[in-house]
Length: 268
Image 1: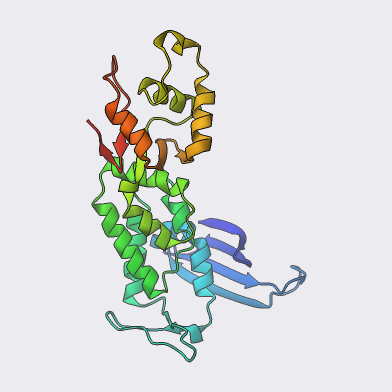
Image 2 (image 1 turned 45 degrees about the vertical axis):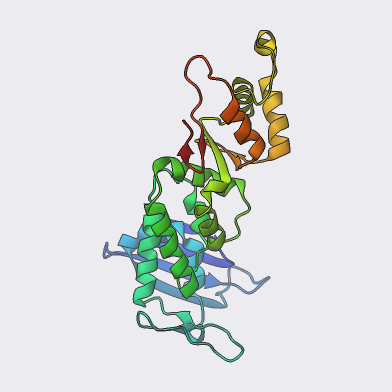
């Protein structure tokens, strides 16, 4: 591993350690306005297992923040023990060596390995693995994903990009509500969307004029009205009765039709 840059306000450097088994991680904090040529206001170094390199690289922000959290905000807990609170109701944080943290890292690793979720890493970067609620949400999300088909995962992946995601709870909520979305595989541009809308009868045009239509404009106008997101796998939007009704009632098309899924399930 060879990394150097700024993460969460810290200057971070990560290299492979000489023993070949660990990663040397140096984290330095400089006071605002301080010269980088002078010693940092705070500096810590860590040896982390090289086997966790992928997790460290993917979740660098969380790793740095958690390692630099003052010890008084951490709490070593045994499995099943309820978190205690300090005065004022502040929840104590788990110790990085707690077994629950290791379970959370394993769940995070499983979540980030699905080929049908190429964008999931982006939404996992700031997960706090020292927080009990986050650990439970990670386990819940890993369980949800283990039950999804490949088509449902592609719908989920697209839905993440279509929604405003502000944290792990938003990711988990979307994973449990895929029936709220219409997913059109292989519809990746405004032009393809326009062609789909015309071919299914949602946009009704006489057959003789269809070769002369501006399909991109049709797709752009629909997208402006309904929103959604184009991805490399297809187009997703929140399910609307108008679109669903038109698709269900449209006459059979000549030749192969676009595959249509709602909530990850095929309509046949």
